[in-house]
Length: 393
Image (cartoon, rainbow, N blue to C red):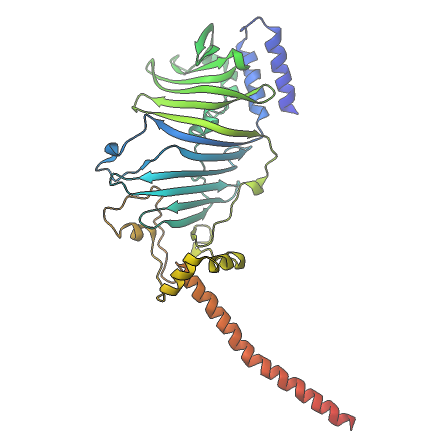
Protein backbone atom coordinates (compact mmCIF):
# COMPACT_ATOMS: atom_id res chain seq x y z
CA UNK A 1 0.00 0.00 0.00
CA UNK A 2 2.81 2.38 0.96
CA UNK A 3 4.57 1.62 -2.32
CA UNK A 4 1.44 2.49 -4.34
CA UNK A 5 0.94 5.77 -2.46
CA UNK A 6 4.57 6.79 -2.95
CA UNK A 7 4.43 5.84 -6.62
CA UNK A 8 1.30 7.98 -7.14
CA UNK A 9 2.96 10.90 -5.33
CA UNK A 10 6.09 10.58 -7.48
CA UNK A 11 4.03 10.48 -10.68
CA UNK A 12 2.08 13.58 -9.62
CA UNK A 13 5.37 15.39 -8.98
CA UNK A 14 6.78 14.23 -12.31
CA UNK A 15 3.72 15.18 -14.37
CA UNK A 16 3.24 18.57 -12.70
CA UNK A 17 6.75 19.75 -13.57
CA UNK A 18 8.07 21.07 -16.88
CA UNK A 19 9.89 18.47 -18.96
CA UNK A 20 12.96 17.10 -17.14
CA UNK A 21 12.57 19.61 -14.28
CA UNK A 22 12.93 17.99 -10.87
CA UNK A 23 14.43 18.92 -7.51
CA UNK A 24 16.67 16.73 -5.39
CA UNK A 25 14.00 16.03 -2.75
CA UNK A 26 11.45 15.20 -5.43
CA UNK A 27 13.94 12.77 -6.96
CA UNK A 28 14.40 11.20 -3.51
CA UNK A 29 10.65 10.62 -3.26
CA UNK A 30 10.58 8.99 -6.71
CA UNK A 31 13.48 6.67 -5.83
CA UNK A 32 11.90 5.81 -2.47
CA UNK A 33 8.73 4.85 -4.31
CA UNK A 34 10.72 2.54 -6.57
CA UNK A 35 12.45 0.90 -3.60
CA UNK A 36 9.17 0.37 -1.76
CA UNK A 37 7.63 -1.31 -4.81
CA UNK A 38 9.99 -4.30 -4.47
CA UNK A 39 8.64 -6.92 -2.05
CA UNK A 40 10.18 -9.96 -3.71
CA UNK A 41 11.71 -10.64 -7.09
CA UNK A 42 12.81 -13.61 -9.20
CA UNK A 43 15.27 -13.24 -12.09
CA UNK A 44 16.48 -15.78 -14.67
CA UNK A 45 19.61 -14.40 -16.33
CA UNK A 46 23.03 -14.98 -17.88
CA UNK A 47 26.43 -13.64 -16.88
CA UNK A 48 29.39 -13.37 -19.23
CA UNK A 49 32.67 -11.60 -19.87
CA UNK A 50 33.35 -9.41 -22.88
CA UNK A 51 35.69 -10.17 -24.49
CA UNK A 52 35.65 -13.74 -23.11
CA UNK A 53 38.79 -15.20 -21.57
CA UNK A 54 40.65 -17.84 -23.58
CA UNK A 55 42.68 -20.89 -22.60
CA UNK A 56 45.83 -18.91 -23.35
CA UNK A 57 44.90 -16.56 -20.50
CA UNK A 58 45.06 -19.37 -17.93
CA UNK A 59 48.22 -21.21 -19.03
CA UNK A 60 50.27 -22.10 -15.98
CA UNK A 61 47.70 -20.72 -13.51
CA UNK A 62 45.70 -23.87 -12.79
CA UNK A 63 42.54 -21.81 -13.23
CA UNK A 64 39.42 -22.68 -15.19
CA UNK A 65 37.37 -20.65 -17.64
CA UNK A 66 33.73 -20.98 -18.64
CA UNK A 67 32.60 -22.19 -22.03
CA UNK A 68 29.83 -19.83 -23.07
CA UNK A 69 27.59 -17.83 -20.77
CA UNK A 70 26.86 -18.74 -17.17
CA UNK A 71 23.16 -19.46 -16.55
CA UNK A 72 21.96 -18.08 -13.22
CA UNK A 73 18.84 -17.55 -11.15
CA UNK A 74 18.23 -15.22 -8.22
CA UNK A 75 15.17 -15.24 -5.97
CA UNK A 76 15.07 -12.82 -3.07
CA UNK A 77 12.62 -11.02 -0.80
CA UNK A 78 12.70 -8.32 1.82
CA UNK A 79 14.94 -7.95 3.63
CA UNK A 80 17.08 -8.77 0.59
CA UNK A 81 20.17 -9.36 2.73
CA UNK A 82 18.31 -12.07 4.71
CA UNK A 83 16.40 -14.06 2.06
CA UNK A 84 17.84 -15.56 -1.10
CA UNK A 85 17.89 -18.64 -3.31
CA UNK A 86 20.37 -18.67 -6.17
CA UNK A 87 21.76 -21.17 -8.65
CA UNK A 88 24.43 -21.32 -11.32
CA UNK A 89 25.16 -23.71 -14.19
CA UNK A 90 28.27 -23.53 -16.35
CA UNK A 91 30.64 -25.69 -18.37
CA UNK A 92 34.27 -25.26 -17.29
CA UNK A 93 37.49 -26.09 -19.10
CA UNK A 94 41.20 -25.99 -18.26
CA UNK A 95 44.24 -25.27 -20.40
CA UNK A 96 44.51 -28.98 -21.34
CA UNK A 97 41.00 -29.13 -22.87
CA UNK A 98 39.58 -31.11 -19.94
CA UNK A 99 36.07 -29.92 -19.23
CA UNK A 100 33.15 -30.70 -16.94
CA UNK A 101 29.73 -29.36 -16.04
CA UNK A 102 29.51 -27.43 -12.80
CA UNK A 103 26.37 -26.61 -10.84
CA UNK A 104 25.93 -24.72 -7.58
CA UNK A 105 22.90 -23.81 -5.51
CA UNK A 106 22.79 -21.59 -2.43
CA UNK A 107 19.99 -20.61 -0.08
CA UNK A 108 19.50 -18.56 3.07
CA UNK A 109 16.15 -18.21 4.85
CA UNK A 110 17.25 -15.82 7.58
CA UNK A 111 18.42 -18.61 9.90
CA UNK A 112 20.14 -21.41 8.00
CA UNK A 113 22.23 -21.38 4.83
CA UNK A 114 22.73 -24.29 2.45
CA UNK A 115 25.21 -24.73 -0.37
CA UNK A 116 25.24 -27.47 -3.00
CA UNK A 117 28.18 -28.02 -5.34
CA UNK A 118 28.20 -30.55 -8.20
CA UNK A 119 31.20 -30.93 -10.47
CA UNK A 120 34.82 -31.94 -10.74
CA UNK A 121 37.17 -33.86 -12.99
CA UNK A 122 37.62 -36.69 -13.84
CA UNK A 123 34.66 -37.76 -11.71
CA UNK A 124 31.94 -35.32 -10.61
CA UNK A 125 31.45 -34.97 -6.87
CA UNK A 126 28.34 -33.73 -5.05
CA UNK A 127 29.06 -31.82 -1.85
CA UNK A 128 26.73 -29.92 0.45
CA UNK A 129 27.16 -27.56 3.39
CA UNK A 130 24.68 -26.57 6.09
CA UNK A 131 25.68 -23.57 8.17
CA UNK A 132 24.55 -20.40 9.89
CA UNK A 133 27.14 -18.35 8.02
CA UNK A 134 25.81 -15.83 5.53
CA UNK A 135 28.84 -15.74 3.26
CA UNK A 136 27.14 -18.21 0.89
CA UNK A 137 24.64 -15.52 -0.09
CA UNK A 138 25.18 -14.00 -3.54
CA UNK A 139 26.77 -10.56 -3.64
CA UNK A 140 23.90 -8.29 -4.66
CA UNK A 141 26.27 -5.87 -6.39
CA UNK A 142 27.16 -8.70 -8.81
CA UNK A 143 23.53 -9.64 -9.41
CA UNK A 144 20.61 -8.07 -11.32
CA UNK A 145 19.83 -5.91 -8.27
CA UNK A 146 23.28 -4.36 -8.64
CA UNK A 147 22.03 -2.56 -11.77
CA UNK A 148 18.93 -1.16 -10.05
CA UNK A 149 18.06 1.32 -7.32
CA UNK A 150 19.51 -1.24 -4.88
CA UNK A 151 23.07 -0.73 -6.14
CA UNK A 152 24.35 0.35 -2.71
CA UNK A 153 22.20 -2.06 -0.68
CA UNK A 154 22.57 -3.37 2.03
CA UNK A 155 25.03 -0.69 3.16
CA UNK A 156 22.57 2.09 2.37
CA UNK A 157 19.51 2.76 0.25
CA UNK A 158 19.81 5.19 -2.65
CA UNK A 159 16.90 7.25 -1.29
CA UNK A 160 18.80 7.60 2.00
CA UNK A 161 21.84 8.93 0.19
CA UNK A 162 19.65 11.45 -1.65
CA UNK A 163 18.13 12.52 1.68
CA UNK A 164 21.54 13.78 2.81
CA UNK A 165 21.38 16.92 0.69
CA UNK A 166 24.66 18.26 2.06
CA UNK A 167 26.52 15.40 0.39
CA UNK A 168 24.77 15.33 -3.00
CA UNK A 169 24.51 17.85 -5.82
CA UNK A 170 21.99 17.88 -8.68
CA UNK A 171 23.16 18.52 -12.25
CA UNK A 172 20.10 19.72 -14.16
CA UNK A 173 21.68 19.60 -17.61
CA UNK A 174 20.11 16.88 -19.78
CA UNK A 175 22.56 14.53 -21.46
CA UNK A 176 22.22 11.28 -23.40
CA UNK A 177 23.37 8.28 -21.38
CA UNK A 178 22.82 4.79 -22.84
CA UNK A 179 20.28 6.28 -25.29
CA UNK A 180 18.29 7.86 -22.46
CA UNK A 181 17.66 11.54 -21.70
CA UNK A 182 19.24 11.74 -18.28
CA UNK A 183 20.02 14.01 -15.37
CA UNK A 184 22.81 13.28 -12.89
CA UNK A 185 23.57 13.64 -9.22
CA UNK A 186 27.07 13.97 -7.75
CA UNK A 187 27.66 12.35 -4.38
CA UNK A 188 30.49 13.94 -2.43
CA UNK A 189 32.45 13.12 0.70
CA UNK A 190 32.84 15.56 3.65
CA UNK A 191 35.96 17.01 2.01
CA UNK A 192 33.93 17.96 -1.08
CA UNK A 193 35.40 15.37 -3.45
CA UNK A 194 33.02 13.53 -5.79
CA UNK A 195 32.95 9.79 -5.04
CA UNK A 196 29.99 8.70 -7.18
CA UNK A 197 27.97 10.09 -10.05
CA UNK A 198 24.59 8.55 -10.86
CA UNK A 199 22.56 9.19 -14.01
CA UNK A 200 18.75 8.94 -13.93
CA UNK A 201 16.68 8.44 -17.09
CA UNK A 202 13.91 11.02 -17.40
CA UNK A 203 12.46 8.79 -20.14
CA UNK A 204 11.87 5.99 -17.60
CA UNK A 205 10.58 7.75 -14.49
CA UNK A 206 14.13 8.61 -13.30
CA UNK A 207 15.30 5.00 -13.13
CA UNK A 208 19.12 4.88 -12.72
CA UNK A 209 20.97 4.03 -15.96
CA UNK A 210 24.60 4.54 -14.92
CA UNK A 211 26.65 4.43 -11.72
CA UNK A 212 30.14 5.93 -11.94
CA UNK A 213 32.71 5.29 -9.19
CA UNK A 214 35.19 8.17 -8.98
CA UNK A 215 38.59 8.34 -7.31
CA UNK A 216 40.89 11.36 -7.51
CA UNK A 217 38.59 12.93 -10.13
CA UNK A 218 38.89 9.82 -12.32
CA UNK A 219 36.22 7.23 -13.14
CA UNK A 220 37.59 3.90 -11.93
CA UNK A 221 34.46 1.80 -12.50
CA UNK A 222 31.17 2.19 -14.35
CA UNK A 223 27.95 0.19 -14.02
CA UNK A 224 25.84 0.72 -17.14
CA UNK A 225 22.20 -0.22 -17.69
CA UNK A 226 21.87 -1.04 -21.39
CA UNK A 227 18.22 -2.08 -21.45
CA UNK A 228 15.09 -1.44 -19.35
CA UNK A 229 11.66 -3.09 -19.24
CA UNK A 230 8.55 -2.05 -17.34
CA UNK A 231 7.80 -4.99 -15.01
CA UNK A 232 5.02 -3.18 -13.12
CA UNK A 233 3.21 0.14 -13.48
CA UNK A 234 5.94 2.78 -13.36
CA UNK A 235 8.64 0.28 -12.35
CA UNK A 236 11.43 -0.21 -14.87
CA UNK A 237 13.92 -3.03 -14.29
CA UNK A 238 17.36 -3.42 -15.92
CA UNK A 239 17.28 -6.31 -18.39
CA UNK A 240 20.78 -5.78 -19.69
CA UNK A 241 23.90 -4.16 -18.34
CA UNK A 242 27.64 -4.30 -17.89
CA UNK A 243 30.27 -3.54 -15.25
CA UNK A 244 33.60 -2.16 -16.46
CA UNK A 245 36.57 -1.46 -14.22
CA UNK A 246 39.75 0.30 -15.29
CA UNK A 247 41.69 -2.52 -13.61
CA UNK A 248 40.32 -5.16 -16.01
CA UNK A 249 40.52 -5.49 -19.77
CA UNK A 250 37.10 -7.09 -19.92
CA UNK A 251 33.58 -6.16 -18.83
CA UNK A 252 31.11 -8.25 -16.83
CA UNK A 253 27.95 -8.54 -18.94
CA UNK A 254 24.49 -9.29 -17.55
CA UNK A 255 21.28 -10.09 -19.44
CA UNK A 256 17.92 -11.11 -17.97
CA UNK A 257 15.63 -13.69 -19.53
CA UNK A 258 12.61 -13.42 -17.22
CA UNK A 259 11.77 -11.21 -14.26
CA UNK A 260 8.84 -11.77 -11.88
CA UNK A 261 8.02 -9.11 -9.29
CA UNK A 262 6.07 -9.65 -6.07
CA UNK A 263 4.80 -13.23 -6.36
CA UNK A 264 4.26 -13.56 -2.60
CA UNK A 265 7.32 -15.60 -1.60
CA UNK A 266 7.64 -17.01 1.94
CA UNK A 267 10.55 -18.41 3.99
CA UNK A 268 9.77 -21.88 2.63
CA UNK A 269 10.69 -20.68 -0.86
CA UNK A 270 14.26 -20.03 0.28
CA UNK A 271 15.24 -23.63 0.88
CA UNK A 272 16.01 -26.74 -1.17
CA UNK A 273 16.57 -30.47 -0.67
CA UNK A 274 19.98 -32.03 -1.27
CA UNK A 275 19.89 -34.79 -3.90
CA UNK A 276 20.58 -38.40 -2.80
CA UNK A 277 24.30 -39.16 -2.56
CA UNK A 278 25.28 -35.63 -1.47
CA UNK A 279 28.11 -35.61 1.04
CA UNK A 280 27.09 -33.15 3.75
CA UNK A 281 29.25 -31.07 6.03
CA UNK A 282 26.82 -29.87 8.70
CA UNK A 283 28.54 -27.04 10.56
CA UNK A 284 25.59 -26.57 12.89
CA UNK A 285 25.64 -30.10 14.34
CA UNK A 286 29.34 -30.64 13.53
CA UNK A 287 28.48 -33.83 11.64
CA UNK A 288 29.37 -35.22 8.22
CA UNK A 289 27.05 -37.63 6.47
CA UNK A 290 25.59 -38.68 3.13
CA UNK A 291 22.01 -38.09 2.00
CA UNK A 292 20.43 -41.50 1.54
CA UNK A 293 18.03 -42.18 -1.33
CA UNK A 294 14.38 -42.60 -0.47
CA UNK A 295 12.48 -45.68 -1.60
CA UNK A 296 11.18 -44.00 -4.75
CA UNK A 297 14.67 -42.88 -5.78
CA UNK A 298 16.19 -46.28 -5.00
CA UNK A 299 13.55 -48.10 -7.06
CA UNK A 300 14.28 -45.71 -9.92
CA UNK A 301 17.96 -46.56 -9.71
CA UNK A 302 17.22 -50.30 -9.75
CA UNK A 303 15.39 -49.83 -13.05
CA UNK A 304 18.38 -48.05 -14.58
CA UNK A 305 20.35 -50.52 -16.71
CA UNK A 306 23.59 -48.58 -16.33
CA UNK A 307 23.36 -48.60 -12.53
CA UNK A 308 22.41 -52.29 -12.47
CA UNK A 309 25.52 -53.13 -14.48
CA UNK A 310 27.64 -51.06 -12.11
CA UNK A 311 26.23 -52.94 -9.11
CA UNK A 312 26.92 -56.32 -10.71
CA UNK A 313 30.46 -55.42 -11.73
CA UNK A 314 31.41 -53.82 -8.44
CA UNK A 315 31.51 -56.39 -5.66
CA UNK A 316 34.14 -54.58 -3.61
CA UNK A 317 32.83 -51.81 -1.30
CA UNK A 318 34.40 -48.44 -1.98
CA UNK A 319 35.70 -46.17 0.76
CA UNK A 320 34.61 -42.57 0.44
CA UNK A 321 37.34 -40.00 0.04
CA UNK A 322 37.39 -36.23 0.15
CA UNK A 323 37.05 -34.16 -2.99
CA UNK A 324 40.64 -32.96 -2.81
CA UNK A 325 41.85 -36.59 -2.95
CA UNK A 326 39.63 -37.29 -5.93
CA UNK A 327 41.08 -34.33 -7.78
CA UNK A 328 44.62 -35.39 -6.78
CA UNK A 329 44.30 -38.73 -8.61
CA UNK A 330 45.82 -36.85 -11.51
CA UNK A 331 48.28 -34.12 -10.64
CA UNK A 332 47.45 -32.29 -13.85
CA UNK A 333 43.68 -32.38 -13.27
CA UNK A 334 41.96 -28.98 -13.17
CA UNK A 335 41.09 -27.42 -9.87
CA UNK A 336 37.41 -27.43 -9.00
CA UNK A 337 36.18 -23.88 -8.52
CA UNK A 338 33.97 -24.94 -5.61
CA UNK A 339 36.25 -27.54 -4.05
CA UNK A 340 35.53 -28.64 -0.50
CA UNK A 341 38.14 -29.38 2.14
CA UNK A 342 35.75 -31.48 4.20
CA UNK A 343 37.11 -35.00 4.61
CA UNK A 344 34.50 -37.72 4.40
CA UNK A 345 35.34 -40.70 6.59
CA UNK A 346 35.57 -44.21 5.02
CA UNK A 347 32.55 -45.35 7.00
CA UNK A 348 30.37 -43.28 4.66
CA UNK A 349 28.76 -44.91 1.68
CA UNK A 350 30.03 -43.46 -1.58
CA UNK A 351 28.51 -45.48 -4.40
CA UNK A 352 25.21 -46.92 -5.57
CA UNK A 353 26.55 -50.45 -5.15
CA UNK A 354 27.23 -49.74 -1.48
CA UNK A 355 23.71 -48.38 -1.08
CA UNK A 356 22.39 -51.57 -2.64
CA UNK A 357 24.43 -53.63 -0.19
CA UNK A 358 23.07 -51.66 2.76
CA UNK A 359 19.50 -52.20 1.59
CA UNK A 360 20.25 -55.91 1.08
CA UNK A 361 21.72 -56.15 4.58
CA UNK A 362 18.60 -54.57 6.01
CA UNK A 363 16.40 -56.92 4.01
CA UNK A 364 18.37 -59.97 5.15
CA UNK A 365 18.19 -58.74 8.75
CA UNK A 366 14.40 -58.33 8.58
CA UNK A 367 14.05 -61.78 7.00
CA UNK A 368 16.14 -63.38 9.76
CA UNK A 369 14.03 -61.80 12.47
CA UNK A 370 10.87 -62.95 10.71
CA UNK A 371 12.14 -66.53 10.66
CA UNK A 372 12.81 -66.36 14.41
CA UNK A 373 9.69 -64.53 15.53
CA UNK A 374 7.04 -66.17 13.31
CA UNK A 375 7.49 -69.77 14.63
CA UNK A 376 7.42 -68.45 18.21
CA UNK A 377 4.12 -66.70 17.59
CA UNK A 378 2.62 -69.85 16.00
CA UNK A 379 3.76 -71.95 19.01
CA UNK A 380 2.20 -69.53 21.51
CA UNK A 381 -1.09 -69.43 19.61
CA UNK A 382 -1.20 -73.28 19.43
CA UNK A 383 -0.56 -73.64 23.17
CA UNK A 384 -3.35 -71.18 23.89
CA UNK A 385 -5.80 -73.15 21.79
CA UNK A 386 -4.85 -76.46 23.50
CA UNK A 387 -5.27 -74.96 26.99
CA UNK A 388 -8.67 -73.54 26.09
CA UNK A 389 -9.78 -76.92 24.71
CA UNK A 390 -8.72 -78.70 27.92
CA UNK A 391 -10.66 -76.22 30.11
CA UNK A 392 -13.74 -76.84 28.02
CA UNK A 393 -13.62 -80.56 28.79
